[in-house]
Image 1: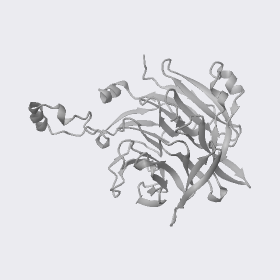
Image 2: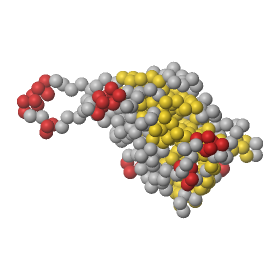
Image 3: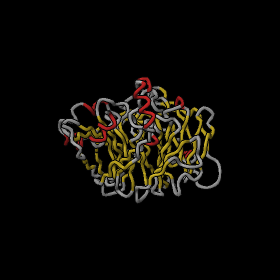
Image 4: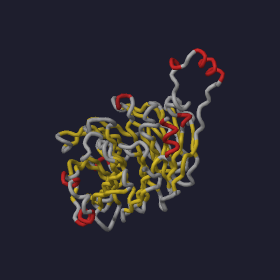
Length: 387
C-alpha cells in the first residue's frame, strides 16, 4: 500500500549536491555529495525501497574535496562526475572529474548498514575535466540520452565540450567558446537540451539566460534580464522543445518560449527567498518542482503551458458527428494552473530537487543541513493525470 507520507534521511554532513541516477531505471536511486571541511567527503547512494517505504544507503569516499555538483552518466550507472573544491597555492578552485564506483559497492553493503559506513569504499578516479587555465567549474552536463561519451563543463566564462575516450579514462576538449562582454560573465548554471538532436545548450550568468548552438558554438538567443537578480537554475520542458523554466534570487520561477524572449510565458512568485532549483517531471511536463532558501519545496501543476493544456487529449476521429456538434458548443478552456503542495519537512535552505528516473511520481529534495526528503505526487492528482 503506497503511502503519501515523506521519508526523511539525515546525512550528518552538510550537503548541496543531489542527482537521480538516470542510467538506473529499475531501482529508485539518488546520489548525494557532502560538503564537509573537517572530514573526508562522501557520496551517499540512496536506494528507496518503495514497498517498505524505507531507505537503504551505501557510502563511498570522495577524498578530493567538498562536492558542489554531482551528475550521473546516462549510459553507465557506475560512472558519475563531481565538481569539488580544491585548495591550490592558497586559492580555492572548483575542479571537476569523472569517477567510477567500485564494483563491490552493491554487493552486500545493504545487509549490514553499519559496515559500509565504518569501512567505506573509495571512488575510482577516471579522469580530470579541468584545465586550471579555465578557472573554477560551475557544473558538468552529460549529453541527454547520450552514450556517456560527451560532457560539457561550464568554467568561469567558458563552455567546454569534452569527448570521453578509453572508457572515460581520457577526456579531450573537442570544442569550446567564451562568453565575452561587460559585467559578470561567470556561468552559474546550464542545461543541455534534450531536443534538436542534443545540439543546443542553455546557460545562466548573472541575470541573463543564453542559448548556444553546439555545432558552431555560437549564441542563438539571449534573454538579457531574465530575472531581477542572479539566475540559479534552468530546466528544459521534456516535451516542448522551445520551453524553458528558470529560477533565481528574485524569488521567482519563470517560463520562457525561447522563440519569443521579450516576456516570460508565465511567472510564479510562491517562494519567499532565493529559488535554487527547478525541475520538470520527465514524463508529465505539467508537474514542476522548485526548492528555495525559504526551506520549502513547492510542487506546481503548470498545465496551461504543458503539452496537454486541456487535460487528456481527445482525438477528433474518436468523436461521432453527434458528439462533435456538442463538443463545439463547449469551447475548450485550458485547465487552471495551481500549486499542488508545499512541503515543509526541511529546516534549512533547499539547494536541490530531483525527480526519480525510475518512478515518475517520486522526488527527492536536499537541504544544506544534510536532510534528504523523499516525497510522492499526491495520489489524487496522479490518478487525475493518468485517467
